[in-house]
Image 1 (cartoon, rainbow, N blue to C red):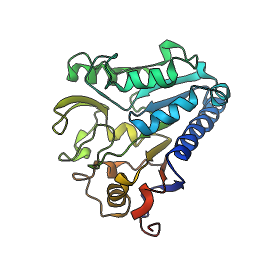
Image 2 (cartoon, one colour):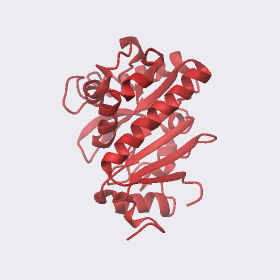
Image 3 (cartoon, rainbow, N blue to C red):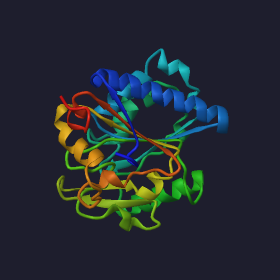
Image 4 (cartoon, helix red, strand yellow):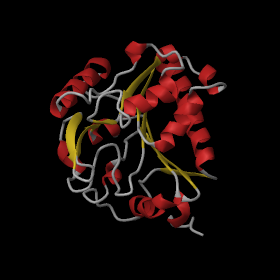
Length: 247
């Protein structure tokens, strides 16, 4: 559907991880060559974790100047950094501990403190590093079965964030607080990549990508970077119900 971004379909989850990891490296090398650094916002979940693990080993580990990579997180659960549910913990174990990135270049959301305080603190970090209108080179996102992305959940129009960069969110479906970057930050990125795999995501991907826009029901539809690039990187199983791509 026009305006929904580029669609790249790969064979399976393994191919998706390889393609996503390679795209990370390619965008990183371009950003470093053009601007001297690569600012990326990571997502949680099993799909990006597989890509992160590939980044943590050769050959991809040796293809990027990690001292010039600056890592943030698109969202985080309000748990301590060593909790199994922490996006930071997952990324650290998957690749951050092995690639030689300077610790000062990894900016985690402090999920162990008050959620609103954590959101305010993270917004201040964004402004200090990237200015009042942060522009990431790459924002990685996933797609939930309910149409959420980052920690933008159904029920509240994501556009209501106004000028906020980061906000605290109580996820009713999970009975927990989370902290998330807002559409103002996501849509300012040079490139946003959704990574979606599995047949269980086919129905929601079709609704978000091909269906009418209803951001209260499907918050992922609010992601439309301008003038940046939006890429939907999906495997064949997830793409099965997309217009023109079904079985």
